[in-house]
Amino acid sequence: MNYKNRKCLQKGFSIIEVIIYLGLLSLIALLVSSVVIYFTNLNNQSKGDREVLENARRVLEEMTYEIAAAKSIYTPTTTASQLSLETSKYVPTGETTSYIDFFICDNRVCFKKDGQNPIYITDDAIQVSSLAFNQISTNGSTSIKISTTMRYNNAINGVQPSVSFTSTAALRNN
Image 1: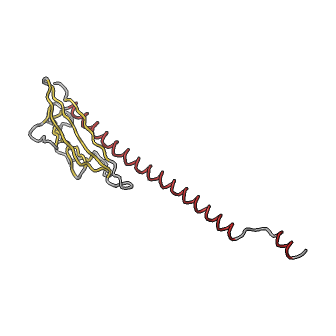
Image 2: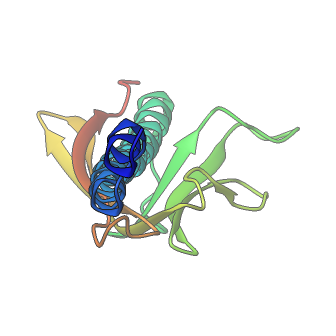
Image 3: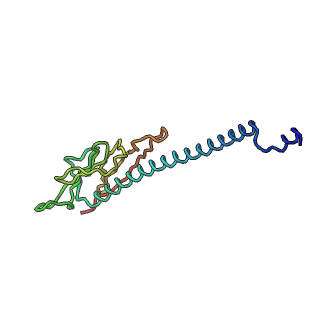
């Protein structure tokens, strides 16, 4: 066999074929990694949204439950940003009534029973930027309008998940 015939029989890739192959492989890897990063960010944002909504739901449920069970609104300490309720729950020994409060402390919603330290009812990943209470009286029955705005502490891709809720709860009739 002569030299020309041996060259035609050799198998392999030319440098141009290798460069094209590496370029296509890099492009595919870039596309796959972009999709993975996009869905990871979307998942993180969804997690932040869920956490904010769950905290707001839990706060409103707790307040609604306590308002419905309360005897009355304790007006000396109730303000636009603090709700104080007179209740027959959590009564200390020898007492017939007790008081509970809802308010913002350390950018979180707190629940305080009479004579005890406040308890956080929102997660530390959530910041409460507003909490407002308005008393509504209609035909002798009293209700409380609760308005709150909460947001996730950490921005996710420049977006900070937040939610604003308004709810109304009625005091029980004595």
